[in-house]
Image 1 (cartoon, one colour):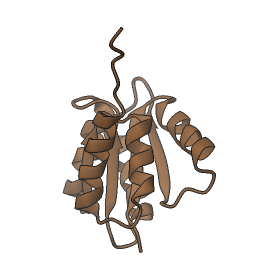
Image 2: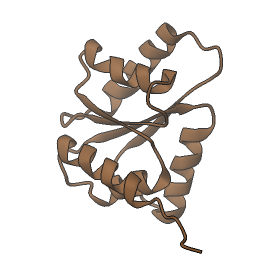
Image 3: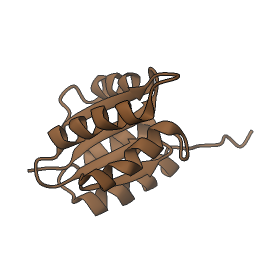
Length: 130
């Protein structure tokens, strides 16, 4: 068994990140899915849809939800999945380094992957010193 990864993003972001990850790692070591919330979507409808995706991803070790923006609808929906009985951890600030770091530590537990995601996301930020 392993942790499932669910990207919760605004429209067109999640699938693009999965595609970029597949460019770097043609065979993803974890099951990854993306739910993209379109503008003006009904949050209740999207929550039910997302819960189904999350349950499909959970093979017993839980689901790591990676959300693009804390406080925005995709993240709020991801956070609410726990109320529906989904075993999850949610990390916001999704970027490609975060996703790749998680995929490189596929054997880790859900709590460990949440920490790895946060560290990977922060570690992927670089400021040149020109």
